[in-house]
Image 1: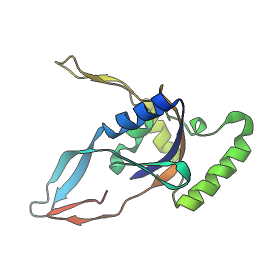
Image 2: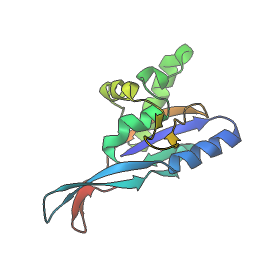
Image 3: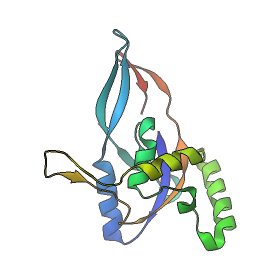
Image 4: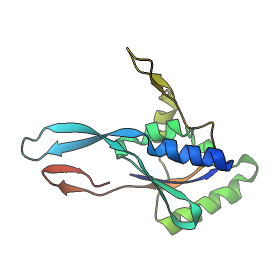
Length: 158
């Protein structure tokens, strides 16, 4: 899955956000074609620059609600600017058309709102926290990846 967005903030925090986004690992579901068993591995999220100065974040599709939660985008209202919402929605629609992505379904935002943004790993002094206080994230839309065979696994082709 690919999430397209803009980030806005001080240079220091934008750079920190990009580093932290790339340091996230996600569970990636794969099906072994020989045994038919589902396997989970960890895969690192990929951040790359995209068209018109936006960013594209690549991760497994099942992780979309969690990605939105740690970026602080837990409702469709987080995407727009309230005082100029009509103009902003139109601009987002144009950007989605240019990029070739789609709106995020509202049910995904509901799932994201239920996910805790910080966790403490049991029996450890380690924890993970959100990225949302660093920058403003302006989500444009999502694009699904194809599924197919890679080596002996059927998987999402990130």
